[in-house]
Amino acid sequence: MSLLELTAVELAKEIKAGKTTAVEAMKAVLEQIEKTEETYHCYITIDKEKAMQAAKEAQEKIEAGTLTGPLAGVPVAIKDNLCTKGVVTTCASKILENFVPQYDAEAVVKLQEAGAVMIGKTNMDEFAMGSTTETSAYGVTKNPRNPEHVPGGSSGGSAAAVAADECFFALGSDTGGSIRQPASYCGVVGMKPTYGTVSRYGLVAYGSSLDQIGPLCKDVTDCATIMEVIASHDLKDSTSVERKDTDFTSALVDDVKGMRIGIPKDYFGEGLDPDVKASVLNAVEVLKAKGAIVEEFDLSLVEYAIPTYYTIAAAEASSNLERFDGVKYGYRAKDYEGLHNMYKKTRSEGFGPEVKRRIMLGSFVLSSGYYDAYYLKALRVKALIKKAFDEAFAKYDVIIGPAAPTTAPKLGSSLSDPIKMYLSDIYTISVNLAGLPGMTVPCGTDKNGLPVGMQLIGNCFEEKKLIQTAYTYEQSRKEN
Amino acid sequence: MANVISDETIEYVGILAKLELSDEEKEAAKKDMASMLDHIDKLNELDTTGVEPMSHVFPVENVMREDVVTNGDGSEATLANAPERKEDAFVVPKTVD
Image 1 (cartoon, rainbow over the protein chains, first blue to last red):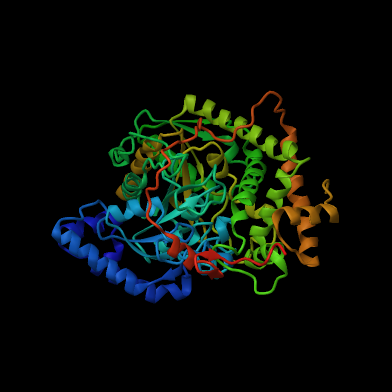
Image 2: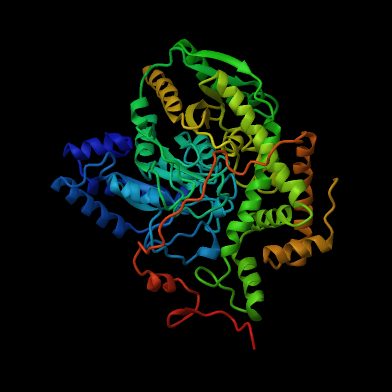
């Protein structure tokens, strides 16, 4: 059996038992990258020597007994909007083509403490704005399940790297579905935790009130283990929540008897691919057979999530991306007249079209005269969406639906119509607006063999119910 | 299309966003923004009278700490990223005569 077939947790166990080493694991991953990276292009930056060196150091510490974490020696890929000390962090944008952070993101620090070893930085949509990884300034990533298709986005490089065995797991970020949607398209497991669970320190901000970091990985056990490692209360992130219930692996229990599962009818209506629908409903049947109590209900307000999200995310993005002005880091235009013109030229040359589109929209909805009508209106609708979820979670433990309305679209078919691309996030976006945890688990394929993902949504701080439900489903799939 | 974005609006938003758009980009931006605003106008179907705008889903309070330095001196690493520097300073184009 090839090392690459192991999950992150299985690999860590083998390393700990002395059956293999961190160095062997890194070698296996780098050989795989050598073979397949030219086709898939999952990464923006890979420093093989540095990765091998780090693997050697990890192995020495493991042998010395000083590195005993649950991911000790496991090679990991990091999305390129997470700051990594001494390693270029581009956000897939030209404007940060040469930016070298002087510190690590807190989530990266937590992984290092648990012994994971970084391979490199994964491709993404520019500043996480996109749903296909095609807005990257550094080329498109292809879906390893079928390279004619996109891997999804914005954490498309991370999802593809897991699917292509070019890493054992990866970190992504999710502002409107950017972990769960690519996980669905690439047939891997992904989780966006409750807002505030993972520190955003060192995550280059897109929509600060919506952004969360989370894992993309091979199975539910890996997901719970990684979550347990990266969840932390961090004084460097003022929205970080102090939680005492982050022992997520305790929820790896094969039992859903009495679990109340709500199926939102509005997630199964118009626009949903029939194959996706059938796969997700089959998965629900499996859970029902295992003793879950399944009931359909009307969640309501689903069609308002996208306009609400794009107003709020664009507003926050226009403010967050003000800092890229060619003064302190990154790209600076070559020809300009005076300071203000330097800002304008730098930003106009440095940002791609989708980023400019959202900055323009955000600047507009925040401008005087439109602020109340657009921005505040969206924040009011956000309150209504949260309330609709509150009512649902009074009745149900877990809400289950599709992660995306279709399987992965073909490369080059999405960017021409922004609204159409935005619709691919219709089932994931409201989860960010309400700050809830959401998780994608593979649940089959469509008629063309492309993966389908089931999305599990929980109430705030109830990741464990998602993990338990997903784990139970996964076990039953292994049995059959 | 219900929303029509004027040349003046695009100019104004360009100033706010600190973006210099070519004529072609301006035309595209007018079209894109109008269609996105049409989509966003759907929110007006909902009566939100009396609903407070929700910025964060949990109550968020300011986090205070003592004003003491806990990280080391990172000035050299910071300046190493500067597009242009002079000794310990960032260099920007002349702004005052």
